[in-house]
Amino acid sequence: MVFDPNNKNKKLEIRRLGRTEYQVTCLGLGAYRLTIDFGIPREQSLSLLHCAVTLGINYMDTAPQYGAGESEELIGRVLQEHPNQQVHISSKVGHLGETIVRSFGPDAYQNEDCIRRVIEHSLWLLQKDHLEMVFVHEPEMKIWGWDEETLDAPVLRTLEKLKDEGMIGAIGLGSNTVEFPSKLAETGRFDVIEIANGYTLLTHRLEEHILPAAQKYNLGIVAGGPFRDGLLATKQYEKIETLRRDKEQTGWITEKTLDRLHFLYQLSDETNLPMYELSLRYILSNCFIHSVIPGAQNPAEVEANYQAALKGPLPTDVLEAIRKIQHKTS
Image (cartoon, rainbow, N blue to C red):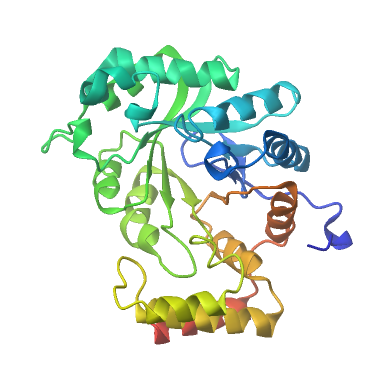
């Protein structure tokens, strides 16, 4: 990645996160891939977090099970070294079998004390006395015990209590799916929604299912997973052909999706825009998305994403070219 001197004096665009009080940078940081789960050296993780804060990225997303708490702990260490930098944090409650309340089993998901303890432990690791946002992680799991009619659940009532107490600032949803989160969004009881792989060059599930409720209730919208397992970060023509030969394609991988990837790679070549830049700036072109949170495993990736985001939304002609590719591969 070559540093662009034209961006030297620029700063990331700030967008208000829906009805919350938080003014977040349009580019945040997903803090999942920087932990022991991916074999990343701690010093490297600390360096990339320092890099993000120094560049002015003021939003980070984490969770207790990311590295069994290491993600939160690393963020906490770095924030202590930047006391004058305001960084908004969203963490989560979920996957409780990987947290300090694991001995409670499934009962933990409907136990106020367990939920409270998990969040208090996150605060301890982050070295904070107040957590800006807590998301229900994968709310579509039946284990949460949502009431079919009212869409109420113990976790939601507990989070509302903690919000009233001032322990957390906003309540959100964090998921890879959109169907059930969109129903929860319609209750008006949530402030922020993060969908991984929900709005990318390959899919607009977030736009189709979540944005109507988000606009109705002025919800904050965070786009996670912008690079679709790396296929939208770098051009991987050989990987496309390998996937084409897989006769048991499932999930999001279809022939049309692979065709779309191929055409997008060609567009990247034609416009001389790296895939990671094309991906990030495409998402930033949607004003209803307040922040995009790519992951990173080293400072160079943070810097590259930052330089891309500084350039803002894509030019109209590039957006039109993308729409034509999407139309002919739909």
